[in-house]
Image (cartoon, rainbow over all chains, first blue to last red; front, side, top):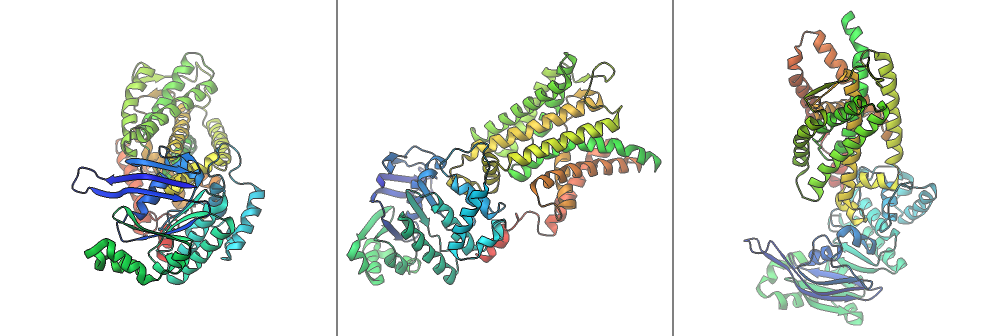
Length: 264
Length: 300
């Protein structure tokens, strides 16, 4: 479903701020894979998601989604393959537009937009049902501006928007990191439910190692722009946080103590 | 006092004509979140094109359509400067505006070209103020209705989403560059219409007629918002508020002129009015935070 071949990316090359963000990433996701991604700060987790989404071009390498080579496609053209939820709850929705308008825009992802109605009465009924399923009471506030919602509500809505048109790959970039623990749990439960129900191929970055182990069928650990650990199936299920920490310690050596805070 | 009351219909007519420009500014400044300074040039372009069309025997309505097209072209150039060449929004507008001065001189052939209501069948003229008010008023209503429909379509919603959150728009498959160009084209087209009507109203097109137009446009949008923002929530009414803002602006100008302000000081006065209205809500701490975005962050 997703194939990443030898992707390299360096930011600010040739300057004092040069940063090798990705150092030859190879990764293949099968349909229905739910991969959790962990790693310290600057490991390249967000960069790889942004590369898949086309936020910046790759330096070299190839990205294939559902047998279409998207390496050269701009962000908005790749959108038809991808559902995305961001770390900042502000990023995924249009604050000045209301809930149903946001959903209508998401429903047209990957389609041509001309002078047809931006939203139809029939759509509104569909959205009402989908919002009811979130169980946040949003179905009663469909004409409320999204800017009035809380961070958790906005992330839940963004999740719904990302899955409204079934994406080939769902990209979750630490989408619960900015939420309080209780809301984070709720959004995570919702994520699980939506991924399960729609059978979505998913990549989820998280800083929470317990979540990384508990969720999904596969886990990868990144360090300095490389995938240093890739585990799936039964082996993954039996992982413990201490296993991940020691694995991380092996790879990062002296930096371990610095990054420990970020991982736990 | 009597002089002031006599001046009011003229202010209303001017306000309605500039109200069309205000709607254009509303599209870029509020919907697209783009400070577009092309307006000072495209207003004069609209006026110049319309006057030259009329002088060369075109029907005034055809002339207005030509002004609309010329304004759209100006907006298109600004859009290209910004999206294709990566020039910052304000600078893109300034470049187009500056270049248009020469273009407008070419169109007019000289700095000022008169078009007399005695010789030509003009759509509006300050000789017939009541008729001018009715014509431009109908014009504003038609434009608002069309825009209200347009911003409800898939394309219009894409422009709104782009102005609101570019990251979200791109993630949902919207080509934000195309939407920005579209918004600028539409906005400056309206400014062109406004210029066409204004040139006919005052009986001449002048290369300098657009000087400070953006300030008047912004003043109208902001006055409209401050005065009616609390009661007008519907999108069409918000555009209508910009038109009302323009009318209020010209009434205020008429009042201060009656009070003895020199016409030479008008620009300074306009700039101060705009600065004041921009500053007021900011000082109250609410204006620059887009509705909700600040509150949302706090809750997150």
